[in-house]
Length: 337
Ligand code: 5GP
Ligand code: MN
Image (cartoon, rainbow, N blue to C red):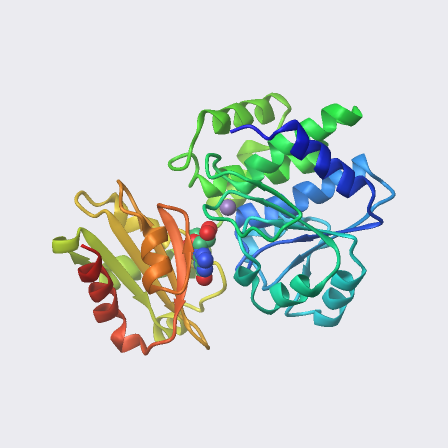
């Protein structure tokens, strides 16, 4: 993975000529989304102090990631829609981080599409949309935080500015979370970045503690309950699924982010290569898909779940009753194999 000099220069030209830069994260932001937002914001703040940089997300994000935005500056479109609309309007440059198409960010995407600002994409999903003024995209990195690190390092070298501590700690979050603590999507460049960040004194233990070892008791018991009572295994398709319905959510005082990582668990079983987690919400069923081995859940997500993602980690949405989910899942596999 290399970011060409031409792209680095174009990024610098677009950003350094802007009065206002808007950084945009994706729906249901995860560690990579939040880390790339706060990391880029921290870098731009020190490298280009005159630029007003704002970060927005389409929906709220889990409490266990709140520490990443210690300044509490990320604006949530759902809580402050008119402020976000104004920021979109005033932006000269809009940087989209960790998603590959404006359709991934719901109604905020429509607003951004209409804006006259120059649009930059920094992302690691396959098949990025082609309607950006600058696309910095590679599926051969662990995370958007990693791609952002290599980009900002080059920008920093050109203007004689090193990344600050806030930037390094932020980018480390996405590196750690998108690789599931270095168990998947790891490339040589991923360890290289981790090594460089550790050399620079990144708070590895502290970040790991806050993100991975701060479950609420309810969240831990919900995980046990799901594995014991909700996980179903279908050996014929080497697949497993869990359905997290409204009743179960209420039983365990569910909060956003509580089911983060659950979908990976069935993949620890020998012979299970595909895992799905279906989460009931007010308007739709949120779908999370994972695989180990060669099976492409990106393809499955695109074809059957109104979504997509990476080859081994994807998601989507369904608009069907909870009672029909298991059959739908099995049908999607039956048609695929
Ligand atoms: P998660 O299961 O953690 O919610 O999502 C895993 C990955 O699937 C995300 O990084 C994202 O790439 C992708 N993804 C999740 N939900 C959607 C969706 O609704 N549409 C698309 N296109 N991709 C999604
Ligand atoms: Mn990511």
